[in-house]
Length: 332
Image (cartoon, rainbow, N blue to C red; front, top):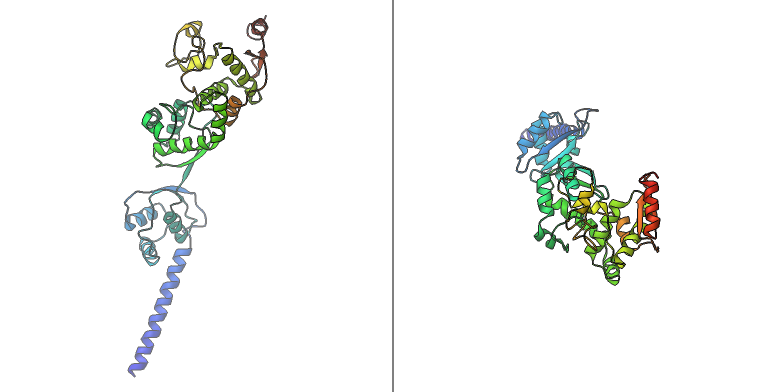
């Protein structure tokens, strides 16, 4: 009789266990809803399981807090959940949600930095995307010790924050964003390019500086090698580069109107007043501008003027250039 009772209890226990397992499995694999918009959920650093399950419940992502907690414990993943911002949906099962937050598959934000953006423009873009503060980005970009740490031969990072499309988490430190951009630059400006620059009598910093001017002067990408040839020819002839974008860069709070007075006012970036390159880049050049700085077209051009259609007219002599200025700028 006792054996029969024990056997019956074992059977009942097994049935209850099987029912519990089936119910838990159903909960874990069944989404709260078959449809539902995604929503951003932030799991703060140091959050405990009870706080996390409550957060998921109040955001209408799971149907039962206690079952979710039990499921997490059964999976032995209580300590595996990673903090961060997640994009979750009621159409995801609790098991899938748990997998996402344990793997740390946080939301990454896409940010595109156009070629020729200055550090200030990049910092503004970072702030607009809510990925950091402009002031902090500017301060770190002008930190000479950070430049040395990153292997940049300058006291600031203008020119070395490579324009590209990046994906960052919301909580990414500003220093890591900057480091990522500099590392991208280094994958483009290789040691081979550095050796080539040296063979031409140029440092990497000089090439990047020249490339930044080419970038700012170019309206049509195909003209970059020709514009580069003009500047190379001027440098060889010890002529001032006379580049308006360099003058603009040296003016604090430029109002958009470049005047004759601006061209006559000395700043380290006024290439009408100084000979050779300015002390550093005036923007962050892309790959094509860097290539153009290293591989200029073979030409005798020393001048160019805008045709007002994004292209330029190139001249070999000042006389020819003045005629082009009268035609395209003065309409004579």
